Image (tube, rainbow, N blue to C red):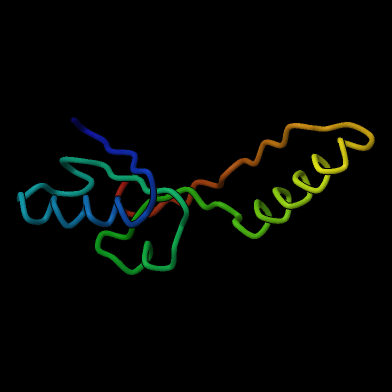
Length: 93
């Protein structure tokens, strides 16, 4: 295994800690990427490469979609696709 894409940043930080305990070098031996860009992602060593998600925007859109569903989709119901932003740091340059 040469890379690990984790469910979220906390899991990725746990993977970073496990690598230290096992003597694996990040990113030389194993690249690690998290998902959500919590503040702690930039504090760990090496700093965690992650995908930034705009949770406030996601929540606002989810509430609007729920309201539309409750109103039987006035106009038209729609799918929404949010694109996360890759934040490149040292764990997977």
